[in-house]
Image 1 (cartoon, rainbow, N blue to C red):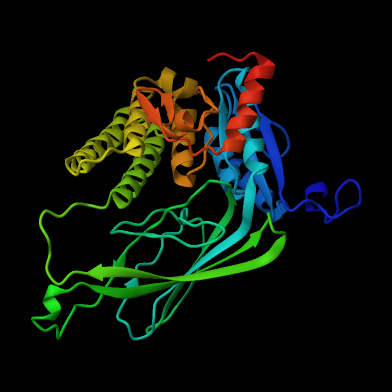
Image 2: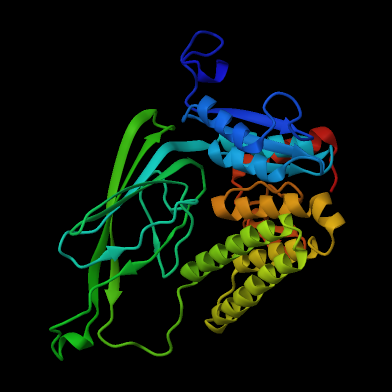
Length: 386
């Protein structure tokens, strides 16, 4: 009843940012114990405006259930392997909650009637769209990233898709890969073939609640355009941002498959799924390097995939931390939000932007300044050393 209340303990209207933090070191063993029933119970009790963050301590908890509950509550799942990590996990979580800049973000993608442009349906799994409180920004590519809450309204002449994004912390971004089908270009003269044509393809509208300005409803609009070249130039260099998002998609899909296989006792099959993603991302990284660029994100995907691969070497390793790390890494990259506390963070902007050391490589932070500051305070107060 308390989390459903329209008033706070002091009788005043609740703060716009509300959350439940759940810490457990084991499995449900009293009352409702069935995982599906627990998910259903939480879904009915948790108001849409309240987020849920889950913290699993030690190796004896149900990591995937906690992940499901946090997804349902638009929060994150934290794996706390050691007691010293409890304060760091809460610090990272609270730092995020203290930096919420927008809530109830909904992105509407709309094609123009009669344009011939079509959007592939978004999969009903988990959405990610790159946006900000002030303007929408999307990456167009040939693969789809995840959709969480998806409201669809389409017809023969007019395609309209809505994506519920939830909230956004300061400094965060979201990315989505859309599959867009364009009509064949016709009736181009020889003169036209020497010029590039900017073709409007999708109209974007973002609505949200602006927490900083205390405005319940804000809206911004924009149009996505794609340059249709008269002649293709050689060599063709892939867009780095799009390639990185495709690598993120491959990473999360491989982790999902590996988790399902490992839970069925097929550790070798899980490792094979991860290895396939490793090989594919390695190949894409080579393409990025040929263009004279580097990708810290790509190195992170590789490092996390290698760690998950190593943790599937035996049943003992998988049960001790492999399952939890696999679930946590996948959600971290799906949501583009930090939940990994097993790293040494610096408050220095350059160091933080250059990412963290992780197992086998570096990690893009996904962590804003407020989270980093809260974690630094937690480390100092607890004397925590990694």
